Image (cartoon, rainbow, N blue to C red; front, side):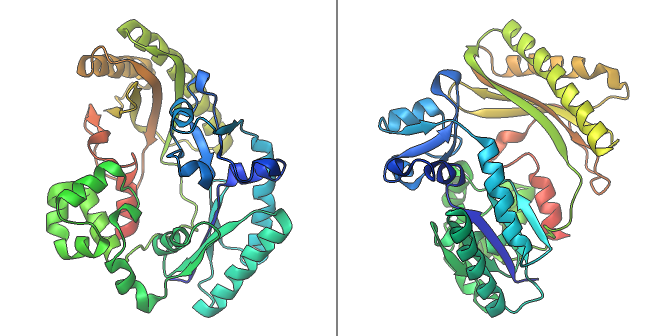
Length: 375
C-alpha cells in the first residue's frame, strides 16, 4: 500500500479564529467551553500548550495553568466553511480521500511514486496556505498509520516522508506514545515492561504483549512492524452511537444519577431514531453502555447485552447506573454518557454484562482497530 498522504491542520479552530484576531497571534489562545459551564478545551495554540493547555482539558484547569489564556467560544460555521474549502483543494489532486473530522484527512496517492506524491503534498500545503491563510502539516507513508505518524513528526507546519525502505529504521526509535491508543496510562505500563520505543515492542514479541495487554497487544505487535492494512477510504457502517453531557454541578446521590441518566437515555433514543431514519440503518443493537466521568476526571464505562425485548432499554440503563453507584459509591459525577454498539456482521464476539472498558486507556472500539489491522 502507499503512498498515503495524511494532512492535519495545525491548531485548526484557533487558527481560524486568529485570522480575524491577529492581535492574539503571539498570545496563549484556546477554543473551548466556558469554565463556569464545565467546558473543556477543543484546541489550543502552541503558545498555550507550553503551559500544559491541551485538548480535552477542563477549561477551569486550563485557566489555572495559564491565567493569561484567551479562551474563545466555538464558531463551527466558520470552521466548516474553511474545511469545505480545504477539501476542495484535496479534490483537485485525488478523488479518493477520507475525512477525519474537520481538520484532517487521508489522501490515496497509491497510483504515484513517493517522489510524485511528495511533490503533490507540497503543492497542497502551498495551496491551503495561499487560499485560506491556514497552515497544514503533511505526512507520507506506505500506510495510514505511518502517514499519520509522519504528519505529527515535524509539527507545526511540517512535512515528513517515511519511505518503505526506511520503515524499520524509523520505527526502531519511535516512542510508544506515538502509537494509536497509547496514552499516559498505557505508556507508563509499557515503560514498566521495558518498552520505551516501538523497536522494544517488536523485540518483546507478540506473546508477551498479549499476556500483559490482551488483544491490544496483538495490535501493538503489528504496528511495531509497520503493519497497517486498513482501507481508510472505504466507507464503513457506524459501529456505535452515543451521547454525553457535562453537568454544571456534580451529581452526588443515587437519585441524581438516576434522574440524569433517564433524561440522557431519552435524548439518546431520539438521536438513535433520527439516525435510523436518515441513514436507513436498521441493524439491531448488540449492547448498550454508560460512561461516567468523576470529579477527579477518571472515566469508566459499563456495558450490558440487549435482551430480546427491545422495550426494556430504559430498564437496562437504569440497572447499569445502579450497578455503577454500587461499584463507585459517593463519587461525584461531572459527566454521564449513554450509547449502544450496533451488531457487526464481521464481529461474532460476545460482550459480557457489566464490562469495565477502562481497564486500559483504550477507545471503546479498539477491538475494531485490531480487526482492521489484521484483516
